[in-house]
Amino acid sequence: MATHSVLASAALASAAPAARDNPGAGFAAGTAASSRYLAWRAAAAQALSAHGDAASLATAAALRYLLPPRYKGDSAAVRAAAVDLAAKASDLDPDNAAIGWLRLQLCAGTAGCDIRDPATTMRWVDADNGAVWMATLAVAQRDKDSEEVSRILQEMAQGSRFEVYRNRTVVLLFDTLKHAEAELPAGYVPSDLSRLSEVMAVAGAEIVPPFTPLLAACRETYGGERRENCLKVAKLMQRADTVSAQMAGLTIEKRLSPPDSKDARAVAERRRELEWRVTAASEYDAPALPWLTNALARDRVREMRKLSREEDVDIAILRRHKIGLEPPESSQ
Image: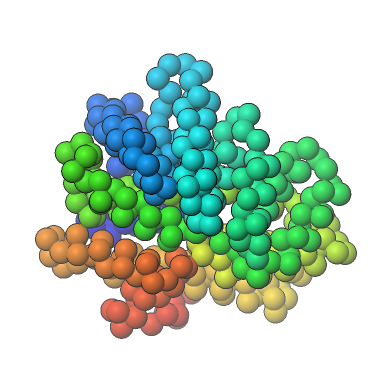
């Protein structure tokens, strides 16, 4: 598979809230190749869970969370074990926002898991991040508690940014797998390219929260203070660290803007620009020679270490290739 296709597929996984179901390495679920890959992933999770450091336990949690149940009805137990590993990792490194966020998202996606403790922890660790309220908002929406939803939106609107720690998480998982390479199955992520593709897919399936509760809370039928708070949150999201959150923020503002207004046109133009940058970066970030694929992956990880936002990495790639940041007129 071409390098840019592999990375573009992984980027696609991180650009939309996944259904938290990932057979791994692009293999179709239920095939022999998929089963073999999942066995390797399970062995990697087991090896890392024996380590005592926060990064290894967090990576083990991320890998284990996506494993299929051993028998019918066992999925909750598999995910609960992953949540326990993430909680241990967070206890070992309580100020690490990326690990704390991973713990919160795994808990939010696990039946019967009480999000209150990890959610409270995240609000202490990163109080200015409006995203830390997303799981709590989802609970309030599920309970149809309109007053609580409005309160949470007000809290979110007071944030200074919206982050899901996308690049930080990818780098953490990548580094952990690379450092433990000698302990992992030989066929599992044997190269930097395969390692990056795996961790981008895993992170994309786990750390991006579902935006449906927020979109429902910010319907155009609501007015007054809630509408203003939703617009503030939408603006924060448009500067978020992952493209999917930016797109959700643009969707909210579009819904709340009068049709054919200046604001609506600006939103449409910004969406077109963002979509073009993601697509163009994936195309231009492909080496001419196949033996340069791992160097390409290392370059992308290097950019992700420096830059916290997914879009900024794409911008860096386009600038490296001397490509303009605006879509050409012909793409309109």
